[in-house]
Amino acid sequence: MLRSLTAALAASCLLAGCQGTDAQALTHRPVPAPPAVDGAQPVLWVALEDHLGKAPLQLVAAGSALELSDATGTLGRAQRFSFRWRAQPLPEPMTVRRRVLGPFSSFETAEQAALAWRRLGANAVVAHPGEWEVWAAPEKPAPAEYSSKLEEQVISEVLSLQVQRPEGWRTLQAPVRIEAPGGLRWEGGVFQGPFRLQPDAYGSWTLVEQVPLERYLQGVVPHEIGAGAPAAALAAQAVLARTWALGNQHRFALDGYHLCSDTQCQVYSDPRLARSGVKAAIRATQGQVLAWQGEPIHAVYHASNGGVSANEDEAWSLPDLPYLEPAFDRAGGAPQGLALPLSQRQQVRAVLAATAGVYGQNHPYFRWRRVLGQETFARALGSGAAAVGSPVQPVVLERGPSGRVVRLALRGPLGERVLVRDAIRRTLRRLPSTLFVIEPAGSGLWRFEGGGFGHGAGLSQAGAIDLGGRGWTVQQILRHYYPGTELVPLPSLGTTKGGS
Figure (cartoon, one colour):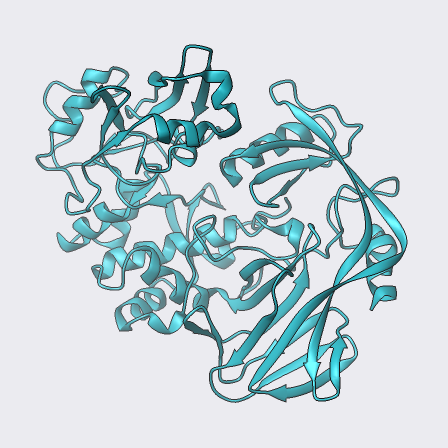
């Protein structure tokens, strides 16, 4: 096992198939890249659980026995397999050195930093050791707009995976595969697989399911929009989930798989929970994606826009996407006396008050109120709280065209911390959206009054449910939220996006 791992780390990965390495230095533990998601029947590699390796792991069959194999061949069949990890020394220590940007609040923001660094000649990669970061070789100067730090690690051991057999614990040799003809029980659900247990770029391990794209949608659509949504809304969600998956297959390339199964990607859970309506929507749109000029769109969506859609730049620092433009999401266009852009506080307050005709009003966060105090701000500032001082006052510095806050200062007697775009909600996690106004609410207290849940760009799921209930078709719903795009069959697209 050690010999094969050492070879993978120090030799074969440097020559072919691994991410972010060159002949002079390693920026991280090399991991073989996942296969491209292409062809008539695409298959995604989805992480059911990442950063494994601290606690033992049990995999349990839902029906007929699991079958375990590794590089040496098939190792046996059982209803349950018990695994553990053990640190084992490498024959020769290996040094990892990198320059790091971040942490970033989202993959989208990290990817823009990586692209800026690549334009300067760096082989920059997006990593997710806990938060989103960007890594490159230490001698590559970072883009001027980003601060960076140097990290160096001497790797003297690896976590080897062992399985319990009747004769004792056996060390496995990657790749480790699990077939589950009757399904695998995981987190209260059942998944069909097949599965892999594989190392990541950080020294831990990941449980990956290899799932066909259309089956993956059965595990996404009901958990994202709800199985009881109208047929057209379900179909729109199926198209967007399919498009998003194809356009984001590079999201975890550094770690040897395509997508995660939580809110950092799309929520993916037990596909068996897909009712007949969900399956019908997936079948009705099978192989269809939403495209702009022959490429899958950046198919972002969210729970509720509160009555006004955002453009992409209000959530992330992205290049202009013509199909993501701010717009009032209501019958009859703009409320009387209002027009975009909404740059002033009183305009946003007027939008929040003008609820007549707005699509998706039934969402529980269509309108919301939160009172935040000094304890919340101190937790949000963390180790930087001392540099800001107390009391802290939240101050809106800039709004985007839909009225959403894009720069928010947490200002104290000693200084301030400025939160930008997606960092606002990632830092002040009690805020459902950035469409809000702020009022004083007593000594050290501030009331945030807002609308919507999520970043606000693209399809509002609450709006789509409302429109589907009014008889709109899937094409009408998609054109409404992504003007200028078209539904196209997968084979008609150009090469899907890849790389990290």
